[in-house]
Length: 202
Image: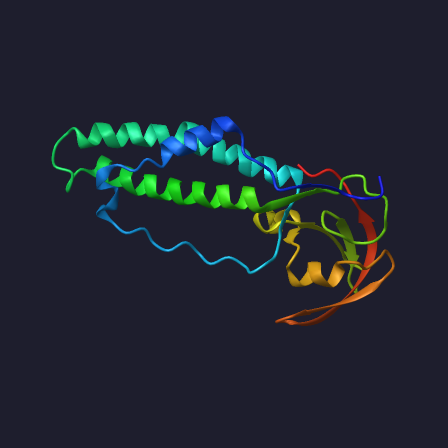
């Protein structure tokens, strides 16, 4: 239980790939409007991800390709058969929704194929690495828990921060009992590492 299990690059299922190939057979009128540029991504050499985060993204991709997109395609086809497309709200909205789905699907495919899934659950160490849940204590004695996760798994309400965030970078490789210095736009904060755990994440 000492070392985390790394799954490396994960392939997508044949069923999803089959649906994807059909999903991106573009209709002749898809070129009516240019798609906006996709947002820029942080420049990192690897996209670490927890098993739970990978499973969520894979499930989202499957649902988009097998459920959402076919439903919107049916709506667009029905709306197109009703005549003038320029003032056809169902058609215009449907085409916009298709572009949104296709952008998200492309993003998910790229992320899943380039991810490195690391399962740290049960790791036996008090040193902080990816997947750790760290209890930190501030100077006034207040404690909070921080879990280090992948870029697409950030959830500030649950204390889940990206492994490239300032606090994660300050914590990585530190141990229980260590003190770290966190520099933020609001100033400098001294934190003590009270506990390091490696729990399964949902």
